[in-house]
Length: 109
Length: 122
Image: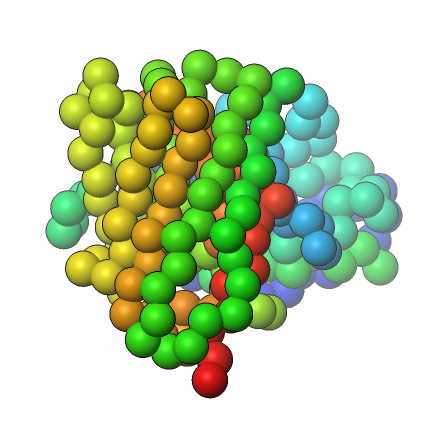
């Protein structure tokens, strides 16, 4: 089965740029979606199809995907961005199954 | 406004059964592809399965850990999604989220409910 690897944690100072990676074999050939989950809340879609933003998501959130790594970039980080972030793809190697990365805890220092 | 409200969670013994419901509103439920996702306490997200709209075949797909034990169905007349869980194991303990899956292959999970907690314990 397809495995997505995320760093367990990323720390960044307010106003700086946070980059959260999602590694997978030839992930650049897949569509990657990203979700934000704050404590005690349901996840929210923040990036879809690699670099599209749903309405209401700030332009500070962007994504890229190439080779074996997809990246969620959060510019001008704010305290309210502190959350867990999950990447997600569909794996067609054995049926069509949805796969999540293990999640990354973003801490705003 | 899109709303997804899960219900039916609770405490169940290993080997038991439980049926979760998800009441949907604010969108055309019959056209929607739907999915269930779970999250064990303190852990990450895990996909459970999906169901397509009836116009797209109404077919279901499941993750390996639940295949053969869990079943997803829908009642478009009631705008309700269901998750029938049988032969429950302690490792099925989790918050279960109902989600709208963007139709077509490889789409994201556009909207999430607030979740319902299922605890499997003796």
